[in-house]
Length: 251
Image 1 (cartoon, rainbow, N blue to C red):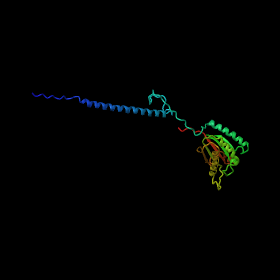
Image 2: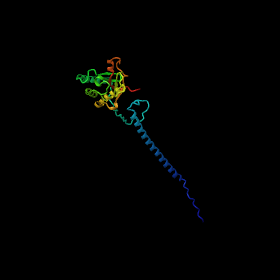
Image 3: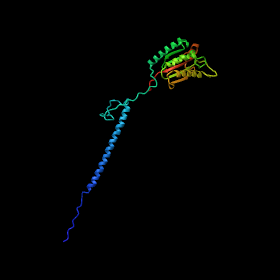
């Protein structure tokens, strides 16, 4: 008698293998997404902290605002204070200028009393621009010359030493009498040369830095007195050392 063939058992659960592989891949995919999101949070926190530390000390953002903060408020906050900028020169307000004027006036009194220069050859005043120290021609230059009198050099050196490291402009001025020599064709050249002579002395004996010092010649076009009289013309022949005051920042 022939034996009946056994029918092989068909495994209908093979799909579980593919399903398990799919679940494993899906799990790995979500692990990668989670890791990427954590890295992005760290980067966002770093960027937010950098922006907050950069803008908060400068007052660009208000300390109290209705919008939520960039970073987690529960996290410890680190405020970075920017280094103070070095001032190119000390601030020169009206009070400071008056103090410098008084110091220079005491110095001038001592120098003129000693007889090195004629009394009244140097005057000081405070203008809208700053402290003006006027050097009259009679005490410092010969007529038509930009060479400083040797007897005035000691006084100029002491005056230069009394100046702070600030912005200084040296201005040369003349009267309206024309000049035409082999060295100076017009009053423009003479006034500029005299301003340069005084500026060189300031550079040698003061704490004023070269980048804060300028010299200019204005010829007869910025008079302080009438050129109709000899006394007025004498006052106009001068070199002004102007210690410029601080200017308010433009809005």
